[in-house]
Image (cartoon, rainbow, N blue to C red):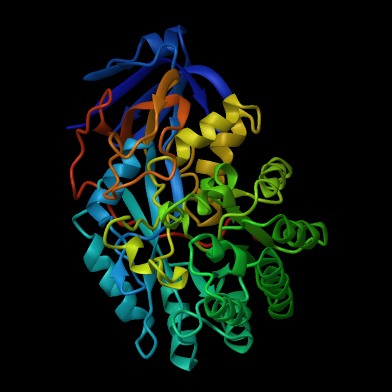
Length: 467
């Protein structure tokens, strides 16, 4: 039995177009679009009709940087794949790409299998995986080829966190050379972790233990230096590069310069860097710990350069780096020593709304909103046009969005499994009303109607921006 849904009367917004159109969904996919009120659209019949008059009809968000159940700093990210994907759906995101972790001394395959086991049967929305490569050796390099063949086409490396995820320049170069051959994309956490560890040690010796010092030791210049170094290593390897969670204006400048030279270098930023700052890290008491993440929040003047980078396409993607730790019992591990505060913020539920607020505030256009949150991440990581757009043949991942509704962000009303909101009390214009994932209703007029296990694993092709 085929199932049909028609969404009538909304303004369909994609990265390239805005059109008042009805959308026909059949068997989990977009079957057709037709201008609202035309005979073609009027002839459609369906078991389910959704009235989107006065609303936006947009592609489901694609968040390509999440960490569900991530082990870090002696604890675990507080969202499971079940709670985290449900919260994502509440926020209008219908696909995540999470990070499977290779532990030092173990194979990539072991890490990937462990993450498949965490996610399978538990997700409310579709999901894919990147692979964190912590241990580069001949076996790892061979495994990278196999993973690309089976749809894990991106590999994350860290210039930060010595003794945990850190790779030295030689290991990074080898992995980049391999990705240049197999079509994979290296994602880089660009911070000079060796130098940062020295500054951490010195700050603690001076008795500087509060959360705000986390931002002071992880200097913007050390993000810029690492970004520059990653770009040059990629250039030597003849490989593309994607720099994750860019927070500093100096790092944006490095990306812009590389792109002006015609290099295949890409940059991602996150809502926390666009909306929060070191003012939050300096909140009194231990409140600042809620905002400890890496790369760290920067002084407010960096925000304008990040918005500019998004407008000029020197930054292409906004992801969340969703990695939640509860204030009670987790963030508190760092009382008296900022270096022991688990690094990460909750945000998977807030991204689409915060970026719509950026449209309201005049930072970006509506189409650019969809581009940086849906279409480009899908293209960057080999899922377009199955994900990231509303077009015939695409998965029916569709959000009915009310651009007039007002809401106040709060931990009391969010659905992430964490005891605080990084955006507590912030008033936002715009709200998700209804969400479909492959044609199935996950959120129905502000009520959760999805289920764990609806979301399926999505293998990916290689980056679609490369020649």
